[in-house]
Amino acid sequence: MAQASPANGFDQPLQRSPLITEPLSNHPVGTMLAACRAAIANGEDVNAPDTLPHVGHNAGRPLDACLRQTHMPGKKSIVENLPVIELLLEHGADPRLYSRSIGVTAIPIVLAKRYSVDQDEKEEHRAFWKHLLGLFEEAVVRIDAKETEGDG
Image (cartoon, rainbow, N blue to C red; front, side):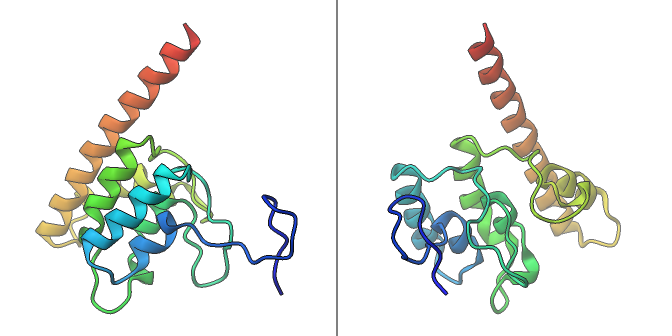
């Protein structure tokens, strides 16, 4: 059954944001980036939770979708989402925000800290997570500086 859209008040189905769907797609990276850039240009919030969550596809926020390897189609790896992750971070995505999953281990920056040192991970995966951790830490510094500027 269609949900009423808060934007128009009519019984139109809500659309899942490309910021959620593209990282979970098998589209080439250029297609993913173009769709995400267009969504951001159209005012999509890089920190907004998924408006249509459901069991088995509970992506949470855009960064969470980029890191949901269990939902990747085929043999896609989260490494392929790095350009989208970078784009989201450039536009203010906060890696400290909770997803819909329970517990702090689902927070993107916590995931990066965990997997960057996990000896059960392959070295190239640990390297990817270390790189992400650095990007996330840089984003936190930018976000905190921007918030401090706004307070002063």
